[in-house]
View 1 (tube, helix red, strand yellow):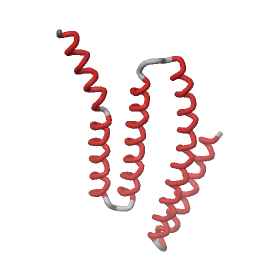
View 2 (tube, one colour; view 1 turned 90 degrees about the vertical axis):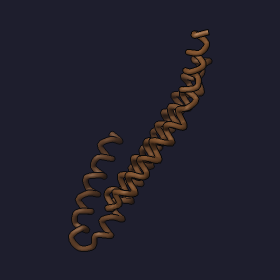
View 3 (cartoon, one colour; view 1 turned 45 degrees about the vertical axis):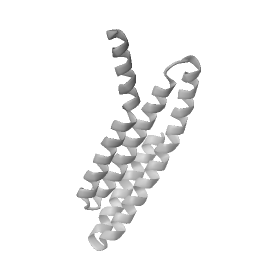
Length: 128
């Protein structure tokens, strides 16, 4: 049911934002930003539940924990960068949004380096 409430909140917020855009555009922008932050915080609450469930899985899996943490780190980077880039793009700052997306891609690349290094070590071990 939480998803329905978030959906209704988004639709009502967009309808109010459209009303403000006709009179004062900055109010529509502020309303959109507040709406994004509210939905973002609701989503973050769900991530805490996912983290709790993943910790239970860690109890069953002894190896590979660092890869799960890496997966969460990469997912967090992409999530935050997409959120910020969307707000920048909606505000009319497409160039800033493109730079945020580029930063996110580079951050994911560097965050994933341990996986590439482990793969290279494994291949080197097999090659002898």
